[in-house]
Length: 477
Image: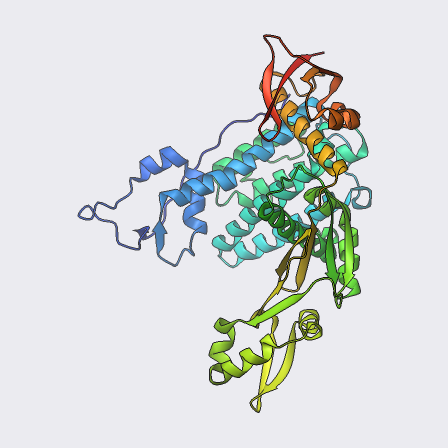
C-alpha cells in the first residue's frame, strides 16, 4: 500500500462577525459574506482555522477573505506539501515504519531538535486547549509548521530522503517526519477536523501504528519531557536568526544563495554564545552557502559601531531630560557600546537623575567595511565577506548548472532516473570541468560532455551565467 495524497476540507460556525473594516455586515451596506461561497472556495477547515486563530473567540472578528486564503496556502498548503514530500520518498524506499524507534542518542541533532520543538508544542497546545484558548493553540501549531517543520527541518533534511542507502540516518529522517505529521494531525483535530482526519488516515493506512479508527477517537499526544532540550532549541533558533540576517545581507548585495562565499564573522560577547554557534556551525555554513564561520572579540577594532537613542521607548520615561540623554548616548565610545550589548543594560546619571538604559532603548548599527556587509539585531552582529575569488565564482556557476539540470529533470524524468547531459561550451567550461564530479552526483548524471556546437531537436536553451544562453541536451541514460 502507498501513502495517498489528496486535498482535504472542513466546517465551522462562529458568533458575531464584522467585515474587514470592523463594520457590522448588512444588506444595506452590501458588505455581507456568503458563508457557503466562502466554504466552497476556501474549504471549511481553512475558514474554521482563520476564524478561530485570527482573534480570540470572545472578541469581535473582522472577517477578511484574503486572510482565509492565506491560511489555506500557508498552513494547509504547506502541511499538504510536507506530507506529499514525505509520501513520495517513503513510497520509493518502501518505508512502513516497521523498524523499532531509533533512540534519541542515535539520531542526528536536527532530528533531536525538531522532536524537542514538537514536544514543546504538545505542551503549549495542551495548556492552551485546557485554558479554553484555541486561538493560542492554533497559532502555535501554525508557527511550528511554517517556521520549524517546513522552512527549516524539511528543507535542510531533503538530501537525507533522496540520497544514500537505507541507513539509520534515512530511517531516522522518516521516523522523525512521520512522528511530526501524525502528532500534528492529533493536535490540530479540534480546529481542523477534516484535514487532520485525512492526514491521520493516510499515514496509518500504511503503518497501522494506531488502533483508533479515527483521529477524533485517538488519545491526545503526551509530552515526552526527556526529548525537550532547551539548549538545543536555543542554539537552533540562534542559527536561524544568524542565517536570516546573513540571507538579508546577501539580498542587499545582490548575491544569489547558490553563489558560495568565504565566511561570516561574528563578534563574541561570552563563551556560551561561541559554544552555541560552534554546535550549529555546519548548519549555518550550509544555509548561507559559506565556507567558514569566524569569531571576533567583542572589543575588536575591525567593526566600528554607532549608537543613537530610541525616542519611542525613552521619551515616555525620561521626557524632560531626553536632550541630555541623546547627547550622552551618541557620545558613547566603542567600549561603552560593547559593554551595553554584552550586559543588555547600563545605569547612568544624567542631569542628576538616574537613568536605566536598556538595549531596546538604543539603535546600534555597524559600519560596512570594504569587501564586507554588516547587519545588527539586538546584541547580535553578522559581518558577511562578499569578496569573490575565481574559485568561488566557478563553484557558483556549477551550482547554477545543477539547478538548471534539476529543473529539466522535474519536467520529464522520474526521481530515480539517471541521465546523460550534452552542454554547449562557453565561459562556464572551466567551472564545469573543475566541478564535474559534483554536478554529476547532484543530478544523477552518468556522462556530461562539453561540445562546441549543440545542434539537435531535443536541445533546450538555459542561462547559466546572467545574460549568457547555453544549449543543453538531457536524455535518460
